[in-house]
Image 1: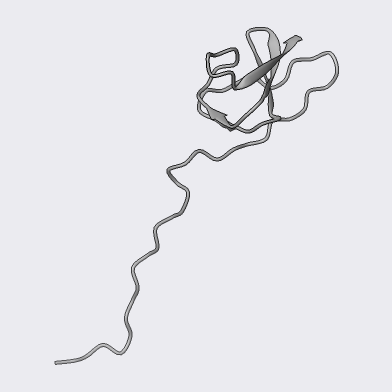
Image 2: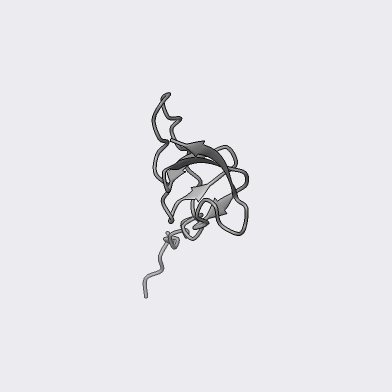
Length: 80
């Protein structure tokens, strides 16, 4: 019977594949709306989006929380 001198290791699981990754939102130019809010993106405090004709700034980390929602995760910056 032959013995193996080398062992192969099993692949390591990928880290972070089950948690949404925060992304940055580009700052809009004057007189325009921010990038539109998307429900499947994680936002962090300071990110800016547009939603319902208004610009909004995230006040905390949030995911799938529409601007103006009950959680208070967004601050309205007014119409854009």
